[in-house]
Amino acid sequence: MTGRATMTNPFYLRVLPVDAPFCGREKEFDALLSHAHSNTSVVLYSPRRYGKTSLVKRVQHQLEQEGFIALYIDISDASSVEDVASLIARGIYSFASKEESLLRKVMGVFKSWRPVFSSDPSATGGVSMTVQLVSQNTGMSLLEETMDSFDQLLQDKNEQFNIVIDEFQEIAGFRDGGKVEAILRKHIQHQSNCSYFFLGSRRRILSDMFNQKDRPFYKSSVNLELPVLAE
Image (tube, rainbow, N blue to C red; front, top):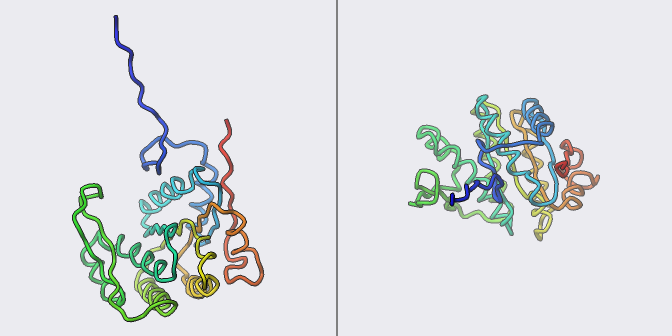
């Protein structure tokens, strides 16, 4: 009696590795690449588990091969303006940590934050990174200072940036969410060498943020819905 051959499950319940089989999103992939090349921002929405994050991670991988600087910032766990500022700083330090000279430059620009490295066997390279606040600023002034630092970094870099902010609609639930939107919009609209992908799984809230006339991000981005994959 011969044993049964086992077949590896081809499906992933987490974000797809960039070298994993990928199908059915070629149109959206090409559209996002095109928008990134033209420094156009995009609102990408769909229910959870439709593959938004896997798609943009793959797009960013391709953009990095073309010389872009790609930042991925997940704010799904953010509950305050300080959390948003921290996650933005962490995303910037994450890409800067790949090159010592760039890390020193970012540390010189970002006066409010310092990177903290720690041993982590589960992390890539066995090291994880967080950021520590070294400023007395809090609230909106901290976010303003963080975005000012980012603006300065962008002015000193000739590369194109692509920045993903995942679960962007969480900002709308903050007590001062409207002020957070206004600060981010004020800075983003002047960042000429950047494209942003704003991801979200709560379509109505995300749509309101970008399509209501009295909101800071009104008509600032292309709307792109990720449909269910065909059978």
